[in-house]
Image (cartoon, rainbow, N blue to C red; front, side):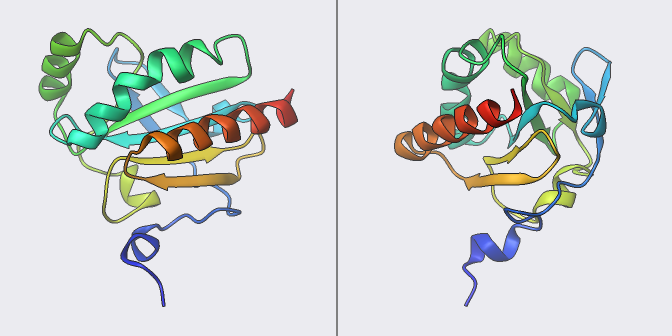
Amino acid sequence: EETEIEATTLVKVGEEAPNFTVEMFDGSTVSLAELRGKVVLLNFWATWCPPCREELTHVQEEIIDRFAERPFVFLPVSRGESREAVAAFREETGYEFPMGLDSTRTVYDRFASNYIPRNFLIDAKGKVVAATVGFDDLEFEELIQTIEATIKKAE
């Protein structure tokens, strides 16, 4: 029988990730289709979510900087929150990396029906190769190793 997490995960490992376009904090837009050929870590989070906040403290150094020169994109998408909430959070934390805004949950609802943080690792061909929910150090370390292996296949 499916666990609650599995039941709320709409895109499973091995499936093609549905295309979407998301407005970024800087006003630009990004679509998954235009990132084809790169490995994408799609991260859903919210400012009020403690494990999301914990996970985001690790991403600059352990993901963004580590894979900076590689065919890789970290795409964090704020679920169900206003630009103002995200702006205040960015100011409070000092984060400057790009963030997507999904105030109406249009993007999130294609991938899942509940729970954050959520990561979907999407390979260069657009297939989901890993999906995680929540944050813990061991799982995060495993995700980093999976990113590395997935990028190697794309290079």
